[in-house]
Image 1 (cartoon, helix red, strand yellow):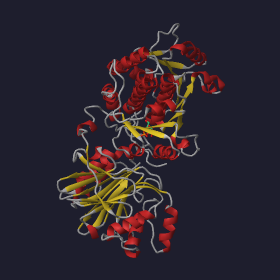
Image 2 (tube, rainbow, N blue to C red):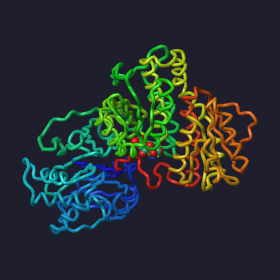
Image 3 (spheres, rainbow, N blue to C red):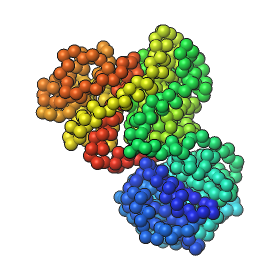
Image 4 (cartoon, rainbow, N blue to C red):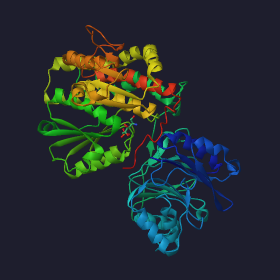
Length: 613
Ligand code: M6R
């Protein structure tokens, strides 16, 4: 949830640290801070608010140190304030730490440290870490020949929960120590300087060569070498990964906001997702998915597990998998699944969807299924993210970096990828007519141009946004696959416009929620299910009768059209219609948010990557 960066080299650390924090700000943005080593002591500059505030802090320009760490925070323990901002120091000012994650036993550790004479300046869980390091530095045993590393190892051995940390000390000003468990951390390497960050895009303009730290692994990072250690501090060699992403992919490319850019990138991101996996007249192909035919034929059930938007992609995936493969498929929210002892055995396939690949609940749910013998597939957008390293098989959306907190292109790519996966399984299982599979493939290949078509004229959606942006409540209705899109449209609206909204299966409305419908309230209907058009229209008629104004997203010719606004989208096989019908809803929430003058890319209280429970 927080973003951390570190630098060690021969240049001033501050410019890189500030730039790195700006890239990582999507991970948390309620406070920020940096620390560098200046004249053999640690100098800290931090405050509540956005990273840009750091540029104006007194004395920031005088920092000339060539070693530094920095942090942008999404508060968990302790409200956003200067004291609670990272970096944190131990009482003696010898060790400084930035941390992403949650220390679950921080109260216990705090009491232990207080009993040893330590005091605390913040309400954070993190502040125990530098003090524990100090404690073990002076009172611990010496494991190996690096006393600094030994103290860090003993401190993190006491931690329960999740952490990615970077530790700096003026006693060891030629090295930074990093460690991780269940929170991401990467090291970018270059000639005579090394960079540390929570994710790869933050480092792309400095390096293409990365080390991806594993759980329970430590690294001692110097300017011209990096040493890796396991949990017992036994040194080992680690392979380097070359990442081909282009740094310009992470810029705004002339768009006002990342979210808008990412909405408009969808034709291309979908092309990338399709890649060489799907071609007309050939079976679909996944190069990294060697699931045996025998296992596929014997699957007793599929679970799709994810959070938020990724879970909504899973709901579409369920419909496609059940239609094409005839295997019972259940979609579960990861935070529920992980604690409810689901019925899983070695004939169960569990698919985990996560754009970031770092969502704590999704990772925990994956570990649970593996422990019960299931076969697991991760669907992620981030190469070598934690979830892909845990799963038996990983397939990537290749949608390119998604920076806006509200997910758009990752969602459509997730749905496309599951559709291709379902076709691939159906081809092996022979569970769906070949001719229909070919037609579906042709429709998938047509998706990019159909989205281009929707994006070519956004004026209608913009006009509607102009009319409704001051409203307090909105409703989204749909049946079948359209209900899943209603859920996603409603989540987008809540997330970035702060308008209260509810999504209902249209037929469920009269069982209670219709009591909320009053004069002039906005109801948005999605109508693409050919067999359910009349039924959804009747449900919408019920809200019109009660005074609602309606916006409809449809690819149908609606008879007796009595709706206030209709957005027509191109026709397509109804199993794929969510990939088109969601686009006007993404745009609607975007324009509403802009009209309200909100920060579209960084909505309040949220963070892009939810690496805590
Ligand atoms: O990185 P993930 O796909 O695992 O993230 C899951 C959710 O946190 C995410 O989809 C969230 O709901 C988005 N902010 C929605 O726009």
